[in-house]
Image (cartoon, rainbow, N blue to C red):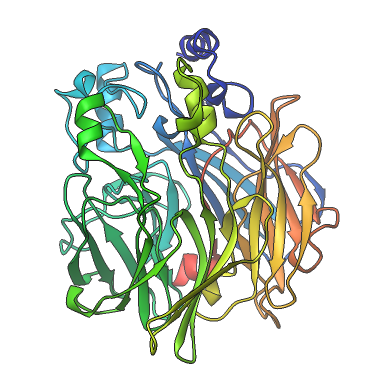
Length: 485
């Protein structure tokens, strides 16, 4: 299997299966890991990161987003560290495992090749649950970027416990980036289908049951990736990057189209509001992969995020470009930190950039989600060859300053959660962690940084037993939530 994928990657010249992106094949549990420095004794919990890791040789052209979901986790307690990695055993993963071969072509494949396979959200693509991971009511929840099933996993063993149905109350699908309000323990989500003109929105209460669900009409099928929440509202997105059904039918594949003649629209809905209560605000055309935070301030809702004003750069390639060249272009994120003000009294939108550097995959102190915050921890984008993260940029939006921790030559990191200290005195009183891979020697480590002095040398560097491939989104689950929720 390993040689099959490596030979395929070399033959196809696909950089997203080589180097820091190459998959790993062993599921490992390793305790008492070697540490340079000292793991702070006040850190107790689990750092988990999701990402694509193909189990079998891909069928057709491989897109980075296609790989089977795999979780990598570092459990920290009493100054000790334990590492685990496990594939997310989705229903589609189990089908391929039984067949001992890949059964789907991916995003760069043709629909006709998958016509006999089960469809997910209106397209014949495999639901891998490989995109993001969140924690709610004692369970890790892994999801797929196209809106799919949420898979429940044990936060310690990473064992897959199947599709989460929230005590039998839930039969929809959900976005990968579900939002958990740690003050109320409510989970907010949206859903869509590529062939339907709506965005569904719902809420799971503190006991783990679906208690609210509504479908918000849109002018056509839409593909939002993220949302935001405040204490009383949620922010849904109708953005002009769409999967045009006519283009999809004519090309026979998933082909996003950026309609820059359309505005970006943001739907503000009360947390338990109906579709009829949504208020739409318009702004400049762009695409938004990830929000940072949103909160209420006077008559306004303020939302910080990373915007991408040119989300389809592959369209500008010369005729005859290879699929791999198109993939590289598509993943060259032209993203930067941006702020919106939505005035609920006047209906006006104000928008402006907070920084012009290329950063994305932002995380913040999750205890402040939906409440006013000033700090975020973004990945600095190295776009010299492929999409990689070469540093962590800490933004202070109140002072309008930033500091950067650079991973180092040949090293690339992962989305980096914030770990609050147990008796934190300020929003940034805590730590930041990241899985870091050194592609020069095929090794990985975890760095623990002082969040208040982000550019300094790590407080601890934890040696891992195997390389962690470049991946997508992560979360931190504090011990008091992990064991007592």
